[in-house]
Image (tube, rainbow, N blue to C red; front, side):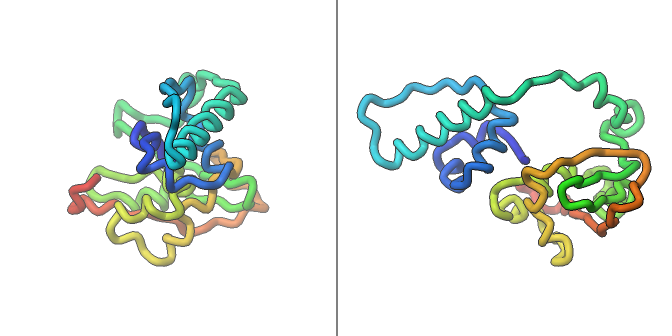
Length: 176
């Protein structure tokens, strides 16, 4: 899921109506603080209810620091990025993405959009509006892995289907 503080603005949160969206947001937003108006307007009430549900969901997560384990997948000294090797598995759908192939098709100069953020985003494809030139054959994947169980492994398990997944970054788009 793509996440930033902007998502918590009322103008953005209005696009999230499904409970799984609010649960997804709760994975990166916790201990929310806000002042509830004494007499909220009806539109404000909907926003405040979403904020409360996100906060409640966030209390259900066990927050772990996995940075030392995650460093295994980074090569900052060389690239300043994750290593694009191995396979990104979707255990829920039994499919995989070859990360080296993904990088080769998605990099523009030195920039490459992380596939997990696009595959798991919850804005019903609105995030794709920011990426010029996403091929039609890749657009169907945007947001389709939200809520699925993902893992990065070194070797492709036999029963997984390898899919062609890439989201090329257009460096001429100044919005990013």
